[in-house]
Image (cartoon, rainbow, N blue to C red):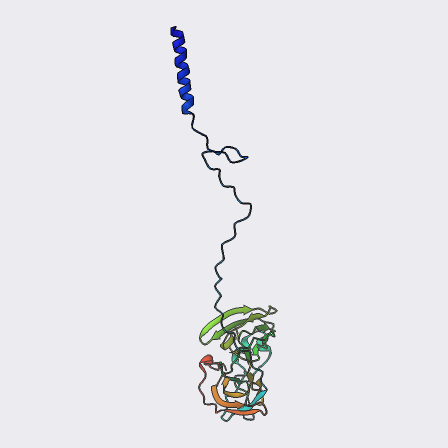
Length: 295
């Protein structure tokens, strides 16, 4: 046999061996699908938004118990402020004669006004905190006017937070200097024709003075309820719509200070109270030396 024939036979034998061994089988294909690949396909993102995580329950704000409503009263406290001593004689302040505009009128000072043994300008009220309930300050403003170089009215009561308009009806400059005790609250000039100064306070006895006209005095007494009144020229006063109950009543005069009395209020008849000043009482801390050097 020729050499060339031997080579051909060898090649054929090698091919037969190779076909017998076979190639590695492909993994089975899914029916109707393409052959799987060695790497997994990435997950497809869902079109739906992921659900929000559950919210933690909101913390409830600590709620304060509301103040009880203001009681509607039917009772009345009536009375009189008597004066048994010899009152200080009131005169025209000497400094008025040297003050432009103020010198035009001889206005007698009004620190102590007594008529037939009755004392004017005493504020009478149920003591602060003495009536259960919560009262809203009135919408109406209280008014203090500067007229004839005097504060008018000399004394009045307001409810805590009530607005107070301080006016200047004089044809001259005034200076509104207010105190609570010895503390200055504000000190502000008010020219003639100026807009009112509107203020409010939560408590206390507020004293109004004028640095230009030192004899001028006014008082605003602030209370947490509306049960107060000021004695008139005949010394009388009346406090209305008071809830029935027992109370401590206070009388305060800028020259003679504080008096107290216990009172029981009923719906069917007025409670009667009398306060008496002798004229020997010490000046209250809220208004020392008003008459010093005045005449």
